[in-house]
Amino acid sequence: MLRILCSIVAALSLMGHASAATLIAAGDSWTSGYGGNRLVDALAAEGDHLSHVQLNSSGATAGDYIDRGMLDVAINTDAYAVALLLGTNDIARADNIPTTWWNNYTSAMTTILDSLSDRQVLLMTVAPIIEPHVDAGNTPLVEGQMNPWIRQQAAIRSNVILFDMHDELISQPDWQSWMGFDGIHLWGDGAAGYHWLAAEVATRIDGILPPGDANGDGSVDNNDFGPLAFNLDPDVGGKTHAQGDLDGDGKIGNSDFGIMAFNFTRAPASAAVPEPASLALLGLGGLALLRRRR
Ligand SMILES: [Ca+2]
Ligand SMILES: [Ca+2]
Image (cartoon, rainbow, N blue to C red; front, side, top):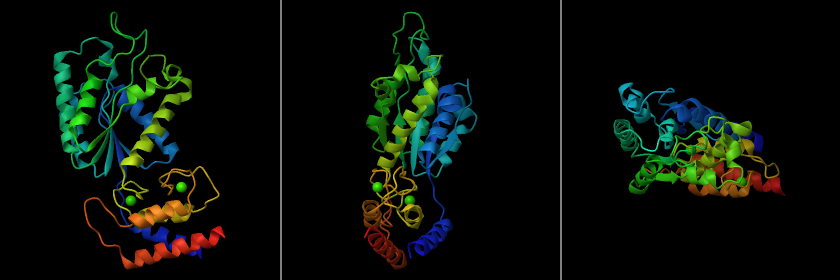
């Protein structure tokens, strides 16, 4: 019975288009060339639904984001939730960021944030730079102007949630071993830093999605129930949010089913009425699960 139900729901879920959460990496090598790509790889290992829009290649300046048309990519993403890495750490080696560069940076990033005002945004501060890679006379843990500005943007925008990655990172016991030999990237110690970052980002993105939204498209429907039904097994751990572990205990059972059933067809922007056929399927799924547990 459960197997048949899962087949039906899996077929239904293929019929819909799901817009997953998107990571937009806007910056130099840290965010695009290394941080973005490595973070996306690590997030894939975590099982989170996250596509990747890379706004820049290594070495370009902040103003290039707009000049090269990369901003259009950010604006045109149809993702419900967006994680933004606005780093560009190389410039922060200096005590004072050059005024022209800073103006370009804040202008480009403001435009990006404005364009995402109708999405849920997870905004991250940038990682520290460690000795001896900071310029002479600078402090060992450089924050410069960038992180205060990012924190302020999160504070004044109601759709933006801050992930203070800088402060969270330096509160980890082994964080310095996670830093690469260049003092910027988190590729040290088997890329442990990127894997830590991926788990943190995945958890936070899950937290800003509507309850029950397993695939991260902003609504709770058959596209979410399909994976949950397919992976349903209260005795097997290691399951991800995208697979249907909605309460975060690592397993997929009655609690997750309840969260999905309670929020089914709820979308933040509309007052959708549950489809009778879909509710009937949910009811059967719950019945099957109850029988399985006996
Ligand atoms: Ca969904
Ligand atoms: Ca669970």
